[in-house]
Image 1: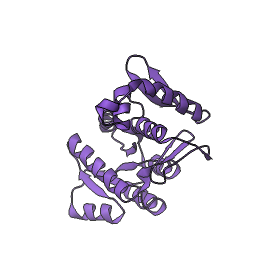
Image 2: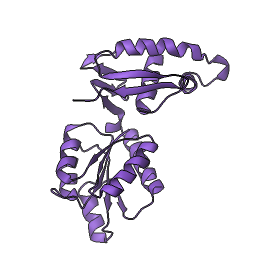
Image 3: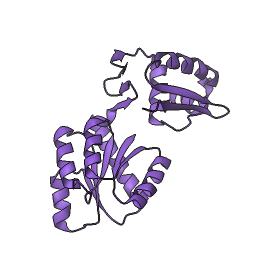
Image 4: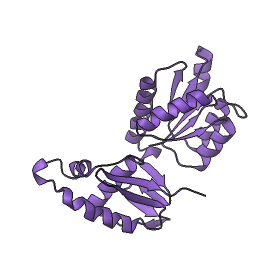
Length: 226
């Protein structure tokens, strides 16, 4: 899941980034409201985590503008202001949840995942993942590379979905076959290489690649933009 963290406290931002990445999130950080607004409006994210006390453009203004443009995008507000007036202002501006500082990371992660589950259940924006030139729409069961339809068999679809969900984290053969075939008696890890090869060919030109991590499994990577 791709997450935008808007936080001007660099120490807190660094600590949250490390923790969120360790929990499987792909994190991009904005140190002020202007950058946060630009990224949230111009790029695809599954959720935004927004501090209200941002420089240049305040968090409430960013929240209102993003909510108007992307009503389905889950947004969580972080703030040191815990008064009723501030909480009401944040929720009225479009926040889906509100967490006051200081907070414990497990609570933040739990709230983020709850918002993502809610959005998935409602058919929200998190059903669509854009990586490189690859657009992966889970709800419509449709994938494209640079707007060209990508033909995937059921197993190829499930494998690519797993790799995207675990982007930048190694996925083992055992994890793949478990997703394919929960019945241990029917699992065949040897077939994974065949499907990896097929998907690699279909992803050519997408700026997305699947790297073999010898002895461990496979890692989905995205070509860095210059």
